[in-house]
Image (cartoon, rainbow, N blue to C red):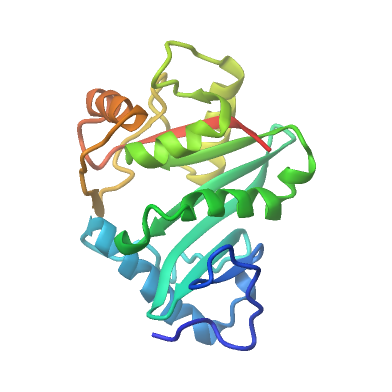
Length: 236
């Protein structure tokens, strides 16, 4: 696997000397000849982090559609991490949806997830607003849920507080319908049944807030194929 995408692409400034980082607000800018090898590498990372029975990204469900943004991190061995996202309008407001972020185990703990979040907020134009923006994600990983909720003023479903926000609930329903037509949410828990039928999350030992989120998820969605669809007001 190549160290990076090649000279036809311009790497952005990296906080790490051992990573080359590429950011594409429009993922369709990646040349067709590069798409299948890159998709294979992305699916390879997912297969390490999850128990996968089939590829997650395919030609029919491609991350290189123009509706997606994409951030890629390479080290000397190849692709080390990636983040896919979408920018859309929900009830007339700017909204961001994190479609999927994966980091190989050897590179976890270096702050890549937080870097991805900052880059997504910057590329979406949200960082220029200087206020807050609707921010959504779907997961059953307590660490991912905790990391995303941490940057939000409010979140629905509220796993750590018994607080329901009707405006966020409505935004959650609208965003899910826009992204996943025909896949309704189970209210009020914002549960998406069967979201991960083809991949199974590797359980870990969780600590701090993530352990509390894990306990809440275990109660709400004991089936590993199910996920929570969450929306918050992200601080930018």
